[in-house]
Image (cartoon, rainbow, N blue to C red; front, top):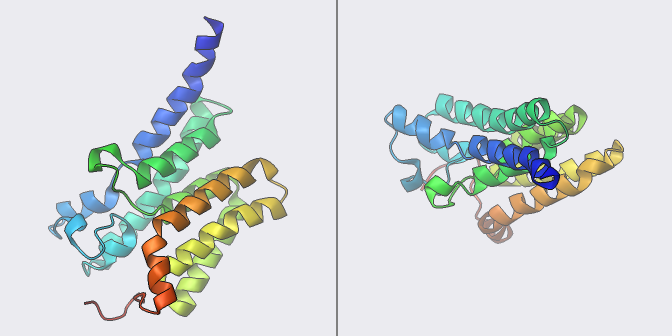
Length: 201
């Protein structure tokens, strides 16, 4: 009986994180504002970059913020309700965003949600994440590259600040971000990756 009780908190943290992470804010906002089904626009991704392709900058910004907040909220709520299981909830939120069961596991690429998770677990690492993301995006205007480099900065900054308990989690999330961007990587290597604000096909 005691062993069964020990599983309650981690399982609840995982479920909480997954449900929060799997809320498809980009899809919901584009439908509510009459911008259409986001899955049939541009890349078909439900993240903020694809929302931007609808021409609705405000909705794209809201999607970015909400995707970030759901990762942050999963960690903070789990830390309050289930002390010791915040990292589990963060990982589950990321998986929920990337692979939501109600969208047949076709979700986003996790950059904004990972930032929220990193901020909640270590604000200095989150600050570096944001600076890398915004710095690359502002100079090169390539959203995918900015997101991947920001994700890659998280395990490195965690190690730099001595947060070794976070390194493996951040490394796993960063690798998943890279995996979700594999088509972008192909286009980057081919020199055909579009830039933010560039012409759309």
